[in-house]
Image (cartoon, rainbow, N blue to C red; front, side, top):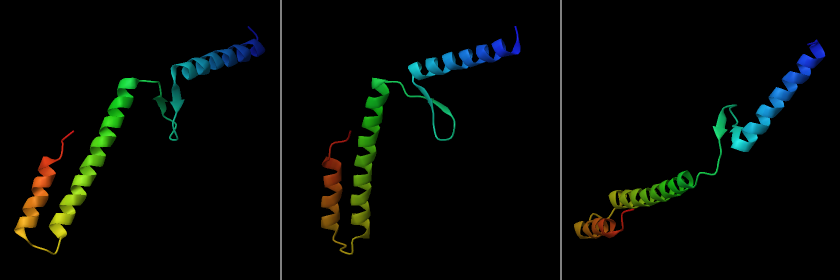
Length: 91
């Protein structure tokens, strides 16, 4: 095998590998790491559920911060706020 044939063979092998990676959904991220970006409905559903949970927890933290830093020290108002947090649906 002469050097020209060797170069062509290497190019063909690399091209086939790249096509297979693209079909499997493997792409490089900004750091150069290869990541699988296939359509996994279970993972997508889990990601949506986790985003909703984080959003809910952020809202609860905001309410708690407001209750704690509120200048009004009425224990009745504080009790109502805590009960409102308890009555909310937990995901």
